[in-house]
Image (cartoon, rainbow, N blue to C red; front, side, top):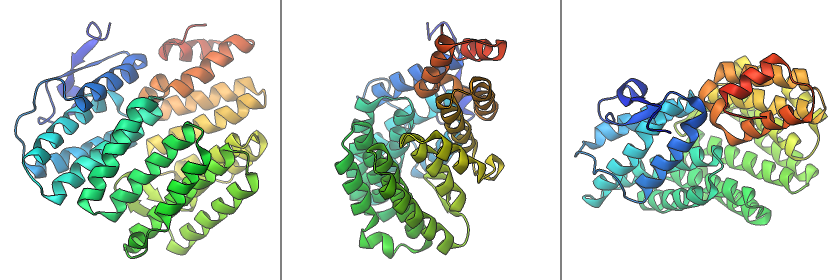
Length: 343
């Protein structure tokens, strides 16, 4: 099915280094394709990529990160697996810490993508490789970001104590405290992650305390801090975005909607973050029984990031629930068709 829906990848990826594969035109299948290609790249299957210069890989990692932040799954389905393959070829022939850092950051991005696509088994594999490679590179920001992704996976596995420990231990790493403004911002992201975990295990007071701590760090930085591995970086606005998700996870959709009203989605730093805002609002509205408003929020997410909205399992599940739980409107049926969700 995927092969029959393929188009040339050069148009999707827009980069000569990683051209030569194909991506489907059907957005609903993009997640499946991306997972299968990441799996094969991580298992060492497929053609060995041509020898490339480290500078070219660094450029392509930047492009892959841009694809992630703009939710271009078709491009990522081409670029990211080939980036892992090329990175392995480079580190096999070199002990340069910078080469390990390139591959560590590639695996961290793969982990984030696999978490979005609810592929936890492959996510653990990618996260562990990211952690080991980041440690070999001795880069404190990469070590911290790899730890943050491990904490997310532990949370999804309902290992809440372990997830809190991973995130808060990484946040207390002395290396982050001497890494300047970016190190402080990375600490804030880790504390945000711990707050979300507290929400998932029902500790609302702990969640709000940790969120307040992250907000204080953001306020102390005096504005947004850009981080290469996190679209738009860390700021008071991104802390507030995490609070919406945390309040939803704590079972309080009214508080989630109140948190959403405190920010404008236009203030969020990337299409990926704006799409997350709208899907979190949709989740809260669905829990409140506001079906039509929920559909409008999902359509707003689709406008920001169509490929993500159509491919993410969490969004598909929300659409499916709306289809079977009550009256459907044409807009919902159209969205379901584009996302490949059947009633």
